[in-house]
Amino acid sequence: MNNKISIIIPAYLPSDSYYKFLDYAIESIYSQTYKNFSITIVFNGPFFKNYNNVQSIVLPYKTSAAIARNIGASLNWDSDYLCFLDADDAFIEHKLETQLHICNNEDVDFCFTDAKTIDENNKIIGKYKINSSAHEHEEIKKYIPYENVLITSTSMIKTTSFFKAGMFVAANEYGIKDSSTQKNEYGNYFEDYYLWITAINNFKFKKISQDLCLYRENTSVER
Image 1: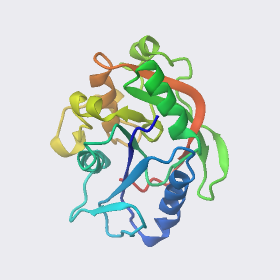
Image 2: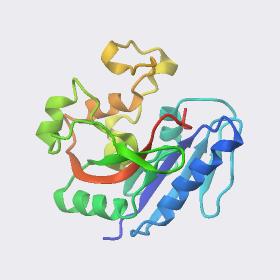
Image 3: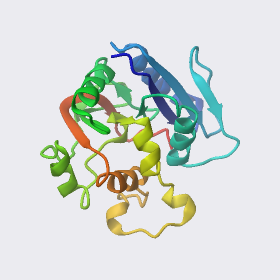
């Protein structure tokens, strides 16, 4: 098992005080038990930072996390798998190894996990509330038209399947018609949601019942 995994981080840093979150995210990647990975950060804000052994892309304009993720993915088209990590979230150390084992042994295209929530000081404060009963493909297929049960930062996706599914859709940039189920309480589009519901009929999904990601609440730096 020596697949190449590319980890894409969209990073909008509104001030330099957010570097600590991105630093923590990068540290969590380098702590992984599986080591055949690359990191691409797509900066689309006023602040950026260079990291050793990391591909950094600095956009000349503010864009959405969806566009930043697509740019990062396009630069890593030759990898076997893609992971998308928001700049204020983090991985548990065996995330990549666990997901890659499932993807290879069960021929899974889109693999997701559960997550714990953390505060601005990296303290675990709870569990991310998603539909815990939807794990296998057919279960996910039942729920996903009504509820986005998948967390983008927990994802591992076959690169070829990601591009065949059409990548992320930047709905708020292109004026795509919306409904109330496609927005959160702040009026923001679930841009990842479009990808999941597009792909579910053509590619195999699975969620792992392990908390392999740390999701930071109320301190988003990717948009």
